[in-house]
Amino acid sequence: MSVESGIRPFRGPGGLWTENGEPPLDDYQRFLEDPAGYWQKEMYPTGQMGELYAALQRAVPHAGHRALVSLERQEIVKFLITQNIDGLHRKAGSRNIAEIHGNYSLLRCVSCGRRFEREGFAGAGLPPSCPECGDIVKSDVVVFGEPIPQDVAAACIDQVECSDCLLLVGTSGYVYPAAGFPHHVKANGGTVIEIGPHETDLTGICDLSVRLTAAEALPIIERTVRGTGRVPMTDAG
Image (cartoon, rainbow, N blue to C red; front, top):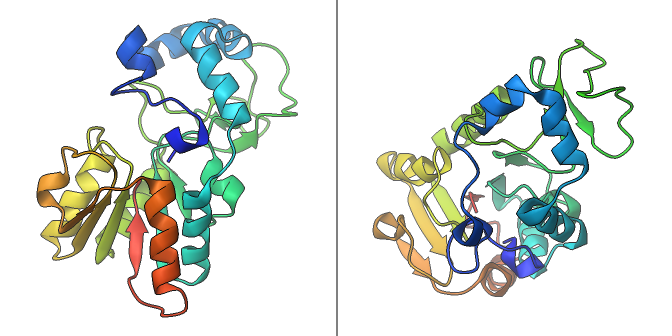
């Protein structure tokens, strides 16, 4: 999804981490040990992070994002789980959504979990404090070593439990816990459909694989099922 909006992937051909190495696996612990230092880097990102943030700010939703919005409004797509941090699903108009790895445009309190718009946040000093509980505020983006926020994790579990059809869009099938959702749907007797130009770690369990990109395939699906009320699905792309 993100690549077709001009955002480089993290892994695979042309990936930021493939070329530059992955962030430290103890990234969250480093944040807790030096929140002020973390915030200095957040305010003035350089290198691959500077490149990523510049791309995130430029990116706009594409036809695939808009098709998912239409499918949601028709109550065909019931819920959307995304690992992307770009916020493009929200910009396109998706409402029933869980951003499992967070949203780069938001901030989140590490204690109470309240979220704030990054732009215009009135927190004073470094690190900024939560106006609700007074604890540290960080980016909503989930870093290595950081637990998935409880509210997001609970929403994902609830939706996966009741899903009878899971649509995988543009995911590598590599990163857990999201990579485990298709296995759970299959174990419950559901259908798993994969959309993407390449095989993934999840291809073997899919009932159908469509070798098109998100921007190519999703508008076709939307046009095909428009007004029929069929094919309820949960997107985990």
